[in-house]
Length: 432
Ligand SMILES: Nc1ncnc2c1ncn2[C@@H]1O[C@H](COP(=O)(O)OP(=O)(O)OP(=O)(O)O)[C@@H](O)[C@H]1O
Ligand SMILES: [Mg+2]
Image: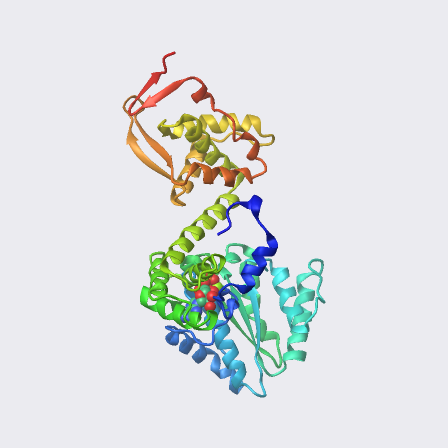
């Protein structure tokens, strides 16, 4: 691998890349948006969704329903798969499928505008501005005029993201009652969620029309993930490029983390990319293990960069004490002090209560970025002892990329400047 960036020669790199061994046959088959031709271990769920939607082929109206299941259990892929199959078997009454990902299209207005614009095929409804009842009227007219006697399916993916507000519940209520105002077209709403408890937030009126029927997707075990990876590897990789045992290893590594097929596929893809980058002919177990490490690092980077600034500052406080305090035992009281020093250096940031600091510490602990263990510290009583779980250098590279944090990374906290050292349970003043 090319490590010395000063000697990087782009021409050599591309030549070597083009002439190097070819690992992938169809790389996009490992992308999350790829709809596979077959879905191993989802027959039961396919059957249930096909059963609920089949009546649309004969002019019937499917009931609305919900789909639950943990992340990466194939909910979105299965719905897309069934919708494509259903289209193959419908001749006269081709159903329409409108996908709405509520993490992207999240306000009631935008949901209605998205449905309308998708059906007409152009951006006719502006992103803001029209009163809701006007859009509704336009939408009802459009459904009858354009979709006529067919069924229009609305798939609200990640529906839990809109159900915690009153407006979110209202739009769901309206969407489940559209048929009362339609003459020709019929509609069916399918809600998908990976939060099993999201129903608690639903308005009882919405539950009665949407939540009565549901399908649950179980998590995959290692053997099932293995079959999924095998069928996908067949499409994505050149023949004989995957060494014996790699698929099983990727499946086992992903199964350790709640049987998420997305993670398993990411791992296999990354392993392939590492092999490719190194001009190796085959993907090996070492590539898979390296891929796992890299994905974990990417995940930590995304997580830290996505945290609120105050949480980033709490982490920075831990970083500074670890960096300048060397073997110092870090207790939560230290974080409170260093955090308040940092707030003096960064404009527009306020100090936090001990309680809030403790909440952020707990969050960092849950994300496994630090460990926080309650210990008896003699004079100090019971307190939390903190330790970074990631390398100091790695953390520094992440923090350097955060605009408001990067300038305080060389700040030596007062508690370290005071030359006090805490060794096991006692505090000593350093001599000389
Ligand atoms: N049984 C399966 N066979 C083949 N590929 C699968 C299977 N289940 C899931 N996948 C693949 O795994 C990835 C994740 O699946 P999908 O996006 O459907 O998960 P999800 O349940 O919708 O997760 P989330 O709740 O995070 O949205 C996709 O790339 C999908 O194609
Ligand atoms: Mg999904």
